[in-house]
Amino acid sequence: MKCEEMLAMLNEYVDGTVDPALCAEFEKHMGGCSPCQVVVDNTRQTITLYKNGQQYDLPVAFRTKLHSALRERWEEKHSTK
Image (tube, rainbow, N blue to C red):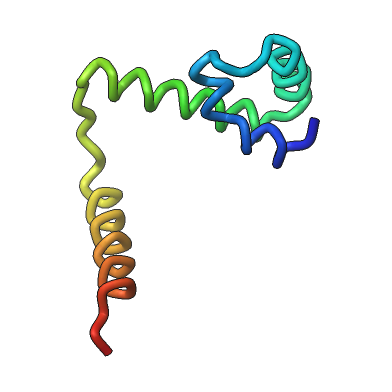
């Protein structure tokens, strides 16, 4: 399994709705691919935080940078120029 194939089915894998035979391939791939393991772990953690309704305070510098980036993107998409 290639990274692209795994990432295309990531939601189904994390939700537990992927075919059991594919689960074995996911596990095998992640055993040798740290970047994919990080993506899966982060996705699971994000879902868990969301489901638990826990708030997480972002560091001020990160929050400021994130807001600026989001504002820039919004302005690019909604610009009337």
